[in-house]
Each structure stands twice: as structure tokens, then as C-alpha cells.
Image (cartoon, rainbow, N blue to C red; front, side, top):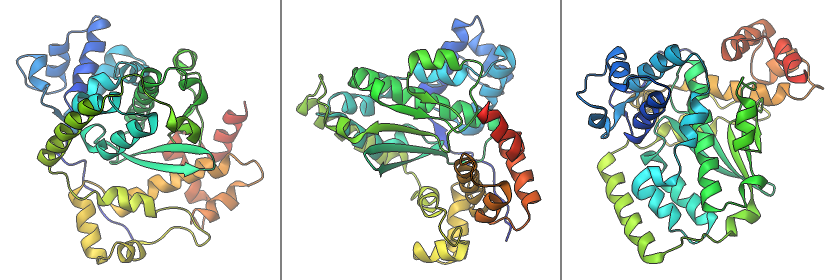
Length: 343
């Protein structure tokens, strides 16, 4: 079954702090922010005018212009490092005022729609690790996908370094793409950053969740949470079907759940599910493609599995179709990706 997937929802607004941080970094590199906005087709009289937010489509155009001007992919790391909790208004205040690192994480998870509207966040527990798993909520070009993920992981790491300075050295930031040219700088800032992983995740020992925070303040926390609730109510987000489908698209012994099975699990018809996903700018086929990409990297990391076996596990009857899909995801064939990873 195939389906058309609409482009990202034109009404999805990225928090203003994100484009403003991009423009601040551009200014530090000697670029004119207003000129960049004009080139990206964003009509504003001043950079302050975008404090209320920017559409996802406009944000992608701004990123494209900045990439062309700067000629490197270091943008994600730099932007993320400039986004500590203090950048995120009431949510950041609530995190800083929380009693423990685990409490701050729960604040982040609860109010994630106010922070990361282009990424879906799922919090998992794997053995003795607390795992924050990030997946793009919409189809975006690969370069932008990498920038989004690296900036998010860098921002999380920066937040941990501020909330609990001694904890960061015990955490890992995973990214599901090869090490970029700026990997050495990334490792200086985030010792536990790891590239070429099977997923994009921030991983922390569960024991760290009980770490007390120095700025804990109960009255301040209550006030900040009340403001967060007001902002979340004003946002009027859809029900978040995309994230729920992503959670159900896990590789099992029989492969992935098909559209009808996922719809049944969510207590709706396949037609309703398809419509709900389209309303969020997504689609079952695109989400299945992202799940296959995630699991392909994880399975290929095991040298005991040959490419044909991995293709079969992912539901590709013809390994050649898997190779074409993998090349679209990574720019490499499965064999070339393995060789690069080994090197």
C-alpha cells in the first residue's frame, strides 16, 4: 500500500528562541540576520519580530540559506550548545526548580510540545539506562534531519551539564549518522557523544535520576508549571497520533504492524488513522520508512548478519530494494556503510 504524504503542516510554529538562536550564531559568523531572512523569504522588519515563532517551512528555508553561506554542518552542535534550559522560558524555569534530575526530565517530557515540535520524544528504560529517543515527526532533507537531531542532543547535554554538572560524564549522546568533520569539537563539549549508532538518543544511568538539583525551589516550580499549562493549552496541538504510531512501529518477529493493525490498536478505522496522520503532516508509509531506517542501522551494526538477512527482517523481499532504500537514507550502500563504520 502506498499513500501520499503532505509536506510538514504549514501552521506548525517553531518556538521563536530557535530561529533567534540561529540568527545569533549567524551574526557571530559575520552574517546579516535580516539579509538571511530576506533570502529565505521571511518578511520581517527586525529579527525581534520572529520572537513569537516561525513556521517549520520558513525555518527549513533559513537553515538552507545558512548552510549555503557557512558551508559546514557544525550548525547543529553550535545551536544546541546555545540552548540551555534558561533559553526555554517557563519550561526551563520549571526544570531548574525541580527537586531532582529525574523530575526535570519529567517536566521536559510533559511539556515537550512547547520545545521540540519537529521531533517526537519517547522516554524508555533499557536495563539500567534512562533513554530519551528522538525521531523526526516530519519528513525533512537528510542534512536538516542531522542538524535537528544534533542540536537537540547538544541542548539536552548542555542542560544536564547545568542541572547536574557531575552527571554529564556518565551519559551518552547517540546519533544515527557518521561522525562529521566537527566530531572532535563535539567530543570536547560532550565526552559521551557517539556517532554511527542505531538511533538518536540521550542515555543516562537510572541512578542519576535521583541526583538533587542545586536550584530546587518548590514555590518557583509550582508557578512555572502553572505557566507551562497555560502555554500548552494555548498551543492547541493535535492529539499526537504521529508519536503514538511511532511507538507501535517496533520490529517484531513478524515484522512491523501494518496500517490496519496499528489502527485497531488505536481503536479507530484505517481511514480515520490515515486522515489523522495527514492532519499532522505525516503518514504511515513515511513513519514505517523511518522505523526501517532506524532498525537497519541497528541490525547492520551486527557483523554476524548478512545484508540479505537484514533486508528480510525489515520486510524487503528483494535485497536490491533494501539497498536502494538504504542508499536514500544514508547515501551509502549497506556494505559501504559497514565498511565505513569498521574503518
